[in-house]
Amino acid sequence: MFIKNWEVQIIENTKTVQKYCNICDNDSEHVICVEYYGPSVGLIFLSKPLLSMKRYWLVCPICKQGDQEISKDQVEAYKK
Ligand SMILES: [Zn+2]
Image (cartoon, rainbow, N blue to C red; front, side, top):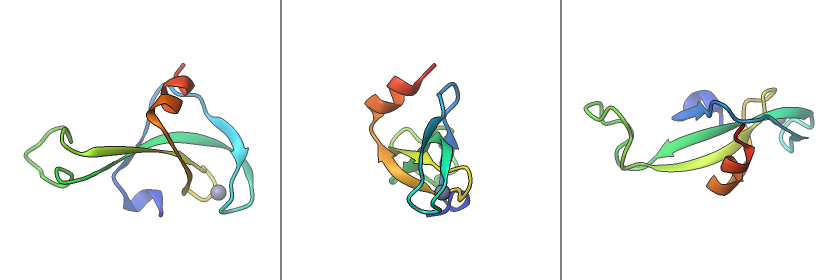
């Protein structure tokens, strides 16, 4: 799962998370991203993906992959 291939955005105003990446074997500052998926993604007349589902990931800055899914509650805890 490569970041450039999905509908994903880095969430502003969140802390980075120092952790070990299982994919590239590096200890790095993971960023928190939201991935949009679901029926409304790709419909150009919607300015916001209101009907879509969201998934949250810790994304490794080195390999640009999300190696751990996190919950919305965890995202709130990481907000500055
Ligand atoms: Zn990595």
